[in-house]
Image (cartoon, rainbow, N blue to C red; front, top):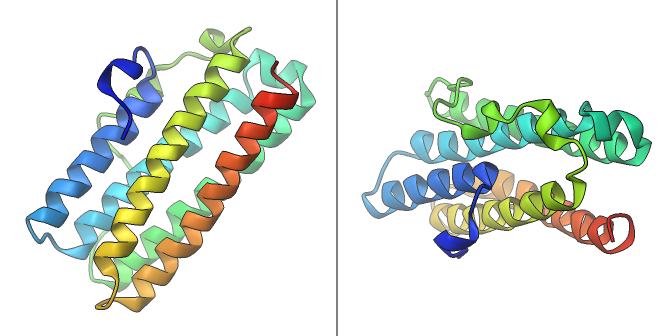
Length: 175
């Protein structure tokens, strides 16, 4: 797990860590599946907001590869959000799209100008935390809810691809 000192001003990572921590507490307390899936859905909402913001930022609009990559990742995260919302509904819950208390909503687009290496490094750290969240959730659902576990495993595979893509971008485009 990421050290708290490493978070710094990375509100995106702070959001994801907070959601992961809440999910860990819920798992330990034997919470209902809907609450756990809502935590994952909230993490996806944070990702959609973050990647969409970067795609339409000044740097995103000036660098086609930034806009393309971030828009594609936002679309993937949106698909994950919809899959989780559908599963929440199937389980008798009501998806909460508001995802209250996300600090990532408060990053103004002008704050991204000229900061692509930092932003992608922050994205990478948050994606790694999301991967851990999905691994923990998959293990939690293992053996008693194969449908939910399969959804989580599919999303996990996508998140691992996102991480690999960001690592490649940091090494090739943002050096």
